[in-house]
Image 1: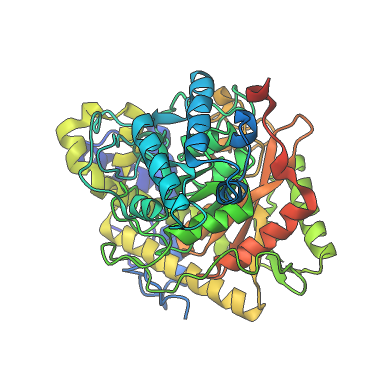
Image 2 (image 1 turned 60 degrees about the horizontal axis):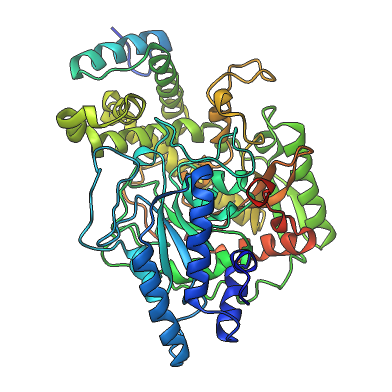
Length: 66
Length: 474
């Protein structure tokens, strides 16, 4: 069981993604799965360390630069 | 002016002047372009569809209007290509796919409607990668070197201009798809600010990252085209309510005292080969000699733009395509299907994390531009000259981290798609073997005019844009 604030490493995440892909009947090549896993792992890390003060952009609009 | 080769080599602004001075006609320009298409298409295959009769009818109308004093502006009577993901009423729109084979829309995308309003002659629909993503390779080839990658996904738009079978072309850019073919084909490509050009009637790849924009052979032409297609559109919910300036006005004002930033750590990372590094430094030196100030900056938030953008792109693409893929997956090529489907396994929470990362990045870029009072950031457009086609997805032999040319292509262009900032690629120089090398400028939101000023200044100093691909001239 993962504790709060613990990010699964890329290998565990790749296994999770593979299971999800199987359930959803999505074909993903192993090397692409590994790349996706790494991509999401890096984002997870960023989310935990640096995104606390940032709300998601839900709509791109012209006011963002003000 | 009757020489066909002379006509097709004109820029848009030169052709517009010639039309108004009675030196040529839109019909002559269109006939010369159609002849050029006939001559070059067996080799370069830039077009998916060429509605010759419709183009000639539009050209005759343009000539009548110009003769009657009804001047619609600089695109009036000019043959323009449009990427095949833009809806065109009564004209095939297949986005390089089997799924839409034979599809003829019953309305025009806003960008096409605006081109028509400006009096442009739609000369053809330019080829693109299937559904604007790179899962399979079209037969299109660049006249700069038929054995090398011609760019993508606005592949036909770039090649048609390089081959002189259009005077300007429309492309779309979700992760560099205007700027990459511009760089490879010695062209100017503008991805304007997100929301600047309406996406209505354009088949999406990822809604929050997609942009429509012009490719041209000169900076001024690009400014003229953007002026014709930009503007608020109530049919596009993401369209910006921001006034459209005359982008060509002030284009000659120079770069004196302009502050242009460079993050050498990110933009000149080890994947940038010497020839590209050298061209980028030459552009910097030239701009400096013209009075610009180069500011060394560091933007650590650039580091995860790739992961952030890919996560958003994958989810939005999967959302658009998943039902079609379930029902008619055989109508997608395997590579495209895999690329478009992968986002289904990304969790909603991970997508939201990417949206938060995007906000962090955008805020950081805003702060950087304000703090340093920057007009632009400069970088290469892509880190290496275009590779041989078989090497496109192979690990580079000069890198030890497995990076492929395709991986490298996104390094410099993704950041502007993620933030929505405007970004232009323009001709920067050439390799010793004659391959074009582009450079990129990223600017403040809705300040495309500033990027045109900088690019124009360098263009006038170097004239790289006047070089032509010898292949189609032999």
